[in-house]
Length: 450
Ligand SMILES: C[S@@+](CC[C@H](N)C(=O)[O-])C[C@H]1O[C@@H](n2cnc3c(N)ncnc32)[C@H](O)[C@@H]1O
Image (cartoon, rainbow, N blue to C red; front, side, top):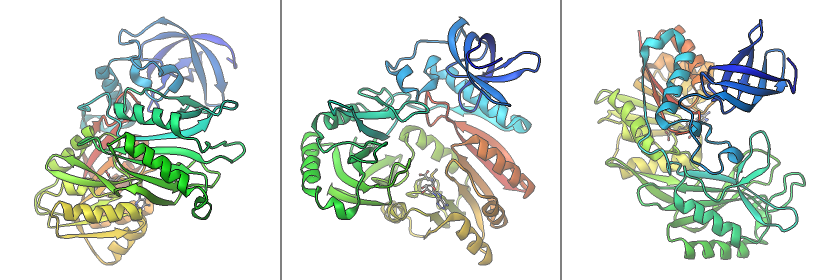
């Protein structure tokens, strides 16, 4: 089998990246096929190959899955973000359960049925669109990068984000006149737009990420302020507009410094009886509806009057929601802006007995260990890369229970094996659909010290 060969394969299962997995030939060589479903027979063209696996694209679906349906998004093929729109929502969550069963094979008996998202469209309340422009007519393009490229799909309508964002991005396309970023030349001003929306009252914080620095910004400040005013006059939902400076050649969306141009510093997101202030650039889950489910799961597994460590705590959401009359909450988070919001959020929710450390988690875990601190429950909610081994060893030595919340089941599996070595026993594995129609799955595991 070589590149450009056309072959017929059967799809065995779905992979953690949402691709169909097929095996070909006597040696059962692995081939990954995008937009394929289990049990389908498909004619594919091989597009790439290495020693370990090949990739193929669909030419013809010879025998489609009985679950296959037409994607409801008109930009499904061009955008590529919601891979699982080729089947019903219920079946997509079943596939996510299969993904978890595959990854956590040895502990399959601990896997609970996946918790579905209460909303499956208009759920995405954080939008990050790169901004570019057409070569000759200089029309503004806003949307997601096409897969494996930096070409933009100009997204005028996206069914998984709130309607207001479609109107706001269209307004920016039509009214922004100061130029967009050209990656090849590393020139042009507007690099990205970031919008954060509260599902409680639809209020929005908008950040314009600019390819400039604070000094050079002075020359264009007047024009940016006037553009920001035009936006706030048109959209009463916009509560604050910010500028983030990102003049480096980088794939990172945000640079280090953000300043406010107009309006408020935060929006309020209500979650049951709690309220959270969320800033323009601090982390908060993208799907507030399913987040409530996530926080409930954590809360239901924390006994009253406990000491809680909310590690990688962001603006404090999980700890505030799950505190159950906690004796004390300790939050560790490295982002200064999120830490400031967390402090304000504790006060807003009348939580008095708290302490906050703006620090690298691994470094702070070591200090806690040296100080012989101990926690009844540690909530670990790290970024996709998971926890570093040294940090896990330290945190295991000072925690009685660990509730690990992860957006990446692969790094979670790795960290789970380490925690088992450290005598922590997994009690359940709970999948939760925070990202409907994508292949992503949030996973929560409760570990108890043996
Ligand atoms: C997945 S988010 C979880 C946030 C929070 N638990 C929530 O649900 O809103 C991960 C958080 O870890 C923070 N973070 C990333 N690396 C870190 C590190 N090395 N030390 C401390 N915090 C870190 C990020 O800023 C982010 O707020």
